[in-house]
Image (cartoon, rainbow, N blue to C red; front, side, top):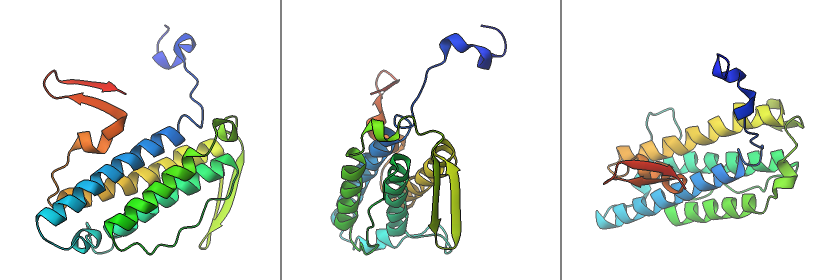
Length: 193
């Protein structure tokens, strides 16, 4: 390969918009669901109201845990829907329990799971335009995924993780990455699933 390595065309692999979005987002929502289940058990075992977790914030001007999860699921369903050229479902932001958030995550996974690769693949240059509050969003599908959906989705999932970790839940990177990789502590091996 000539230097720099970025010029080595023979080793390039095409990664579709679908492959870069739906499976990754679905996996991270599954990981978030698993972490939330641990949080529910944590509150129950410590005999405190789970509302303490749901209302927790990293800083006063940041969203609480419940809103972080609502926005993460909104990014997931809205992002995948717009990439597929369909309308995203609307969810009321009225969850007040971990069980209700689990239901929201489940509905989001079911929705994005129904999106076929053919609905998204080949749409890299599709124009995505929509209004949210007073903002007009305008991207190509590829820009929308890489510059908006994934960064925002991961921001809110990571913030939810951090809020629970800060609250004392014993979770680590293996919980965050969850179904994406296999961690073998004894052999110190990490592999993609």
